Image (cartoon, rainbow, N blue to C red):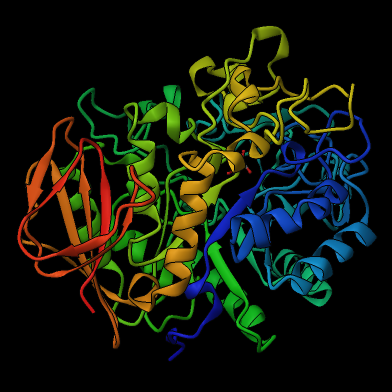
Length: 536
Ligand code: NOJ
C-alpha cells in the first residue's frame, strides 16, 4: 500500500503557484515567460523561502483559454520560450532545491491540436474516436449538458455533420479517455516531462474526463439546490449527475499513478477536484492510495470566513482524509477572486497564519504574499473567455502582472514594456521591493511564517486538534509532533480577546514581529491578531 511517509518531500513543502504569463516578462513582449521565471528563482527560493512551484500551462497553445487549450503538449509556446528554456528552468530550480510541478491538462486539447484536426477531418479518420463525436437529437445537441464556461457542451461540425463534446470552450474539445490509444498518448506526454525532470503534475479538471457512458440528460436543479461553490451562472441550472465523475475516472487515476510511481522518485500528482461531498472527494486518493497523491482541497476557499464555519470545514476535511493520507490547503489560484479582496480588511494576515500552520501542504498563489487585491479590468482590456460569457466570473483581475517594484509596469517587464493585463493601481506600495523594506508588510509576514514552518516539525507534520478554549471568534488549535507541541491562536474579532491555552513561549505574532515572551495563564490578543505558542 503506497502510504505517504513523513519524509516525502511534498508533505514538508510549501508550494507557490506561478501563472507564467503574469509572473515576469524577460523580452518585453508584454507576456510573462519562462526566462522571466528563471530570473526570479532566487526570490522564490531565498527571499521568500518556498520549496516548490506549480507552473500553470506554458505549452504551445492558441491561447483561447490562456494555455489550458494545448495544441502541442511537448512544445513550449513561443510567447513563453522553448523546450530548452523549460529544461533550464527545471535544472536551475533544482539547483536551488526548488521542486517543479507542472500543469497536466488531460480532459481536453485545443481544437488546433493535430489530433483534433485529424479527428474532425472525416468520420472514418483513425483519430475520429480520440474525441467524443455524436449525432444530435433532431438538430439539437446530443444531451442537455452545459459547458463550465456556459452554453451547450457540444458544438456542431459542418464537415462531418456530427457534434463534438467540450466541457469548456468549443475550442477545447474533450479527449475520449475510453480509447486506449488516447490513454497511452497522454501518458507519453507525462513521460516526456518526467524525463525532463519535473517533480509532478497538477492534474487539470481531474474528475471531469469520465462522463456517463449512457449520456443521460442532467436533471434541472430546483431553485433551492445547495451550491457549495461560487455562483456558476447557467451551469448551476442543472444537477451535474452525468457530466463528470463517472466511476471509471478512478481507473484513469490508478493507471496514471502507475506511470508516475514507475519513476521511483516520489513524483507528486495533485488533482483539481471540484467536488464538495467530502467522502466522494476523498475517493480520489484510491482505496489503497493508488490514485492521486492528493485531490486539491478547495474547501477552505468556500467556507464562510468566521471561526465556527472554518473550524467545521477544517475538522471535516481532516476527518475525511483517509488514515495514512495527506491533504493540502489553499486560499487562492488563477480561477478565483484574490484572497485580499475576498476577506474582510485586515484578515489577510490571519489567513496567512492559518494557511501556513494547518496540517497539510500549503499552496500559495503568486502575489498573495504581497497582499495583491483583485484588479478591475475594463471591458476593453478583458482577456478571459469565461468573463466574456459570464461577466462576474472573469478571472482577469486575479491574473494581473506580479508586482516587483514601483515602476510604471511594476517591474514585470523591461522599462517601457507593456503588460498583457493591466498592472494593479496599488503597485506603487504593494510590490516586492517596497515590502522588503517594511517590517510590517505582507511579504515580511509570509517570509517569517515560511521560516517558522520550516523550523518546526509540529507545524509541518504534527497532528491537529482544535483547542477547547476556542470560542465564536477565537480559533485555537494544537499541532503536535514527536518532539514539539505548539498552539496557534487566531483572534477574528475587532476587539481584544483573552485566551488560556497553557504555559509556553510566544514565538510568533501577525501584528507585532517583536512580540515574544513566556505565557503562564490567559494572554491577550489585540484585534485580528494571530499568535503561535511553543509549549515544548
Ligand atoms: C481548470 C483550470 O484551473 C482553468 O483555469 C481552466 O480554464 C479549465 N480547467 C480548463 O482547462
